[in-house]
Image (cartoon, rainbow, N blue to C red):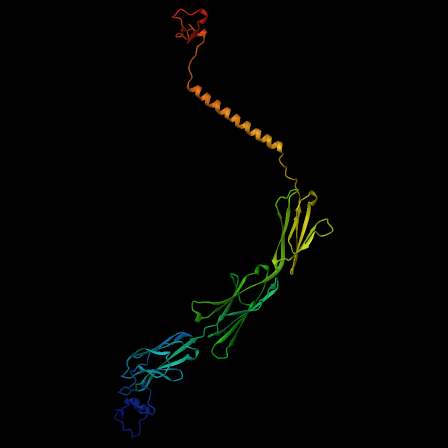
Length: 424
């Protein structure tokens, strides 16, 4: 055996009969076996050469297809030996710093006596397997690293009900995604609510022809109502290879449902002699395309066409009554009613009334001006007011200062008729 001493230094002659196990145990000597005994069970005074040597350290790796994986191998006691990486097919990739396989995807990252690190870029599913790190001592020590390659699932596809579905019918949809490894999971969402599993969904997993990836199919069914029209149904694939990203597909539901209708008048309050339009507003999917107008109590229909408007060019009192609009689509018919009550015509102002109104306006302006003038005059007189005494006040106790002023009295030439008295 390489690396063994030629003879155990125990004082035993190999050619002599070997002592029994009990005697060996008593003497403390080790038997020479072919193959040799396991080191931990040997009690020889010398140590086997590999007893103190440690195995290389490595770590299993998981990588997404198309990504890069780094393989690191470390050893504490290289004993002047080189490290080597080999692939699952036992092809040497690197021996120390030397490239052994012509594959540009494989690059040397670090090479020291204690470490050999390489990287493999653009990883494919075929790269999956056990990679071996070896150090060529006596004996050769190895360690294996398992590389797991994750297959990325394709964007899911939804099949079924590309055409509209009638309300109260059951919608059945299929979602499918291929290429996942391990098998992906699919989940459904309608509007802002998740569609739970159970009886509503069925999932099937099938291995792809390459024998490595899987195709996942999910089927869901639910009853639709008119509220589901234009609602988006989403299928999302969940897989560890997608990390924080998400892959999903959305399909918008088209639901056919019965129409609804209501009648709107224009103007809102019709009067005799005016023009009136009655609008039959039909809603639904599909939208009503046929409108039948009738008046209750009348034998013949008023109008049947694709036009939803009934026009009265000149309203009369006789037009009053209940009008019925029947809106029809492929999903059925609906009836709307409107009670028309024609009011009296609006009074028309006459010429004489207009003339009287103008006169009234002028008179009002004049009165306003007179009142304004009186107010100004009164204000003026109040500011200049005084005390004025009559003839009878002369000599009275209330007006002791009253005096008589005779115009031209001092001249004495004027006649008696010219004399005038002023009492102040």
